[in-house]
Length: 83
Image 1 (tube, helix red, strand yellow):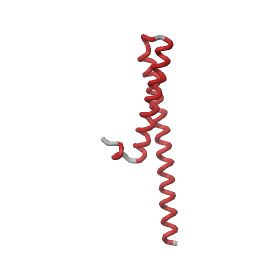
Image 2 (cartoon, helix red, strand yellow; image 1 turned 45 degrees about the horizontal axis):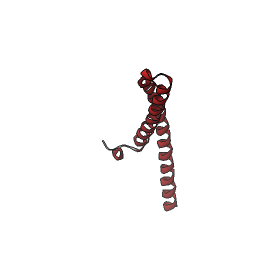
Image 3 (cartoon, helix red, strand yellow; image 1 turned 90 degrees about the horizontal axis):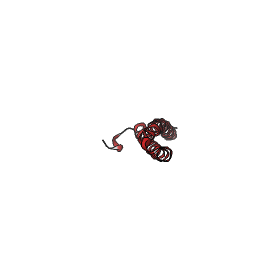
Image 4 (spheres, helix red, strand yellow; image 1 turned 30 degrees about the vertical axis):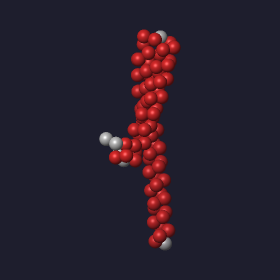
């Protein structure tokens, strides 16, 4: 499935979860390698999953904000045309 085929909220949520999850994975791996290398994969998962959830929520909120702004602009332009 392409990202362009998703609804607006879904696009923002997927991008937010992916980018935050990737950043959390890199941070978890780095911290895990510094602290105790044999458990680094577990540190990666411990930081990547919560980061992805937070990124999903942030992306959802950003997508909702964009949707609201677009709807307000559409409504205002319709008012200008009719009135």
